[in-house]
Image (cartoon, rainbow, N blue to C red; front, side):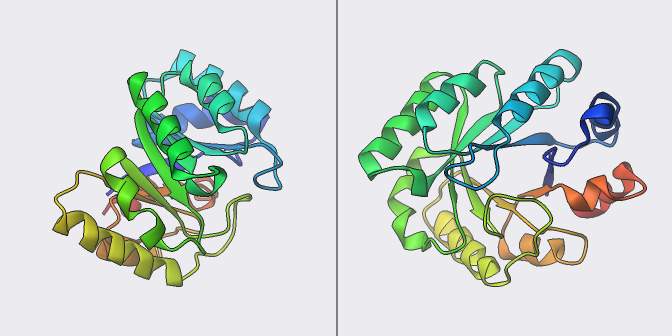
Length: 218
């Protein structure tokens, strides 16, 4: 299990020290929650751009960019400059599959791994034919838009079904889960077949980042 730490709620005045502490605590990725205030209520695009600028100059920990935005292509271009490991876009942001596949192709042409994310109420049947074109499927285990929510138990079943389909079809895809993940429920996600988890509150509010990240990985 790999851990992608969401930096959404990192305090600005402590951000450099917090990023350093997370790196030494061995987070696998920094999860960049980019929201535009339209696709989801919150707007974090300015803050996340600023944080990415800092991270690119102080760390080699890969960036895991999650775009919760309407104007997808312009945000892809904005965050591409930070050379992230991957950019994940929302299935629900596209008008049709042709548009979605165009965005995914653009991400991959720029040597970045491409992912799609689905909201809790999106049926996985809708995205099965897109799986061969992506590196990551990000399952939202809460409604996207704000941190600190509780994981929706029905999303675990969705991860199980995805894992079965991916294994049956010999696809090489990461299943990432995001939202309300903590030490009490991480085992259920691992069991369901998830191999990357996004955690923010659970790590940032703990007394010991390293210990918490180790427990999440284990």
